[in-house]
Length: 199
Ligand code: AMP
Image (cartoon, rainbow, N blue to C red; front, side, top):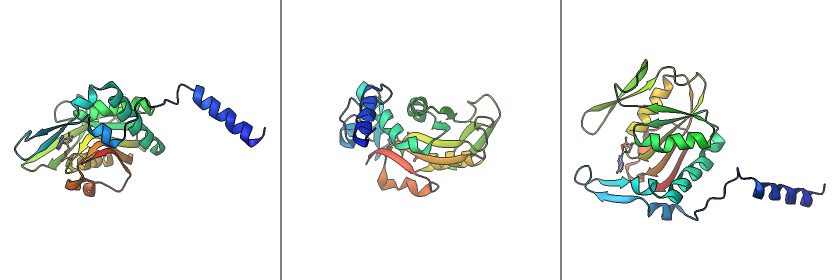
């Protein structure tokens, strides 16, 4: 078959292949931003809270966010997506489904029923703790960490340390929103980072 005929056949196959979804949303990062609500002074004065519930309730916006994140992360070929309690669960699970990966929750202390690895990390005032089931990730698995927002980077960096305890390979991070002025990515290990919206 000549090369042009071959390419025509491939193109036709792609168009008729329902697995190759066309994104029904011509949204750029800017338009996605319009679905994220700003709540000034929440949870305390001076913080601008980026509320993703307004994105979640918009069916096209939600589909666009998951599909675009999946496109960005697919080449890292994760076996497992890790999502942090609680908004990391909302984006992590559909992303895992889309990438044909498993989903593993990282939770606040005392929530996971079986034996856990735990990590304590610093907050602005005091410390916090995150846990993961010891048997959740088979050794050498490829792992992608997902959350709604990276702010100071403390939560994502602590989760990366939990992954270290499991002898797995961290292949990347995915965040719907990055608050770039806080430079949270400086705390993270040197793996690729996918983000959709920046402030
Ligand atoms: P950090 O550990 O500082 O990167 O904070 C990350 C976590 O806090 C994420 O799980 C977010 O859900 C939440 N978070 C921090 N800052 C904001 C913000 N300005 N708007 C919405 N969520 C935030």
